[in-house]
Length: 288
Image (cartoon, rainbow, N blue to C red; front, side, top):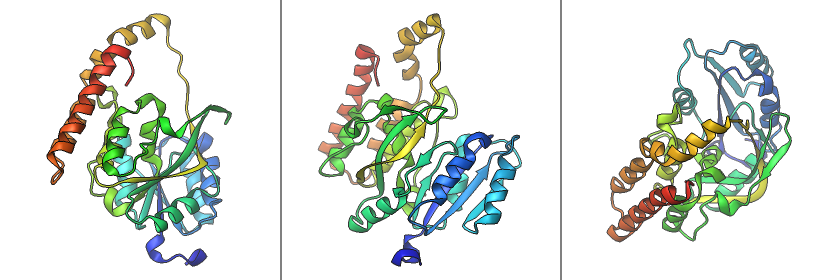
């Protein structure tokens, strides 16, 4: 095994992609340049109609760690994310978007953190937002997106009060223990009715165990700022709390807390109170 690590330390990188040819090479080069080399890379092509298949196959021919899968029909993002997870062979697992970039030490630092703290189920790092051209447009304060806390219970409370729009759902792209994440219900934002499903998933995982954080900025998340017409923006702002209340976002939090077996009654009641607080906060501040 590379660098003295055992087979137990194999990382599976799952990359679901649809028509991602424009940025795909940059993302693959970033992952293949990792200083930690003990990984496999699974590419699941969701029936792309651009150059994604040829690019993926070219990279797979050059590197035996890459396995390329071509879906015969266009499925949902959730289905494609699940596909790579189900085929993972590593002890650790991460999802990788086709348009993101990682520092060369990302995997090395996350795995090393796990080896020092084996009770954790996920390790994440500091990250920034970049635009279509790769220009950094937002630096994040980790305390706005990561649930720091002395134990799992404190992290759960902290996660609930963090604002969704400050990026807490991006914890989805951390390095996970594969056996833990595989056994948890998974859903992405396939449409507006599933808004917040990614944050719900992260919270559901946090109910399974605590997270760890490395303070190095090792993840560069590409975002695509959208411009809305003034009238549309005004309508969204006015009806935003009511529209969000129609989604499963809040009652999914409630369900997950209520269904958590063996959790102390007082702590469960406190978490339910925090969920009520963030729902009320939405109506007074239009922030979630």
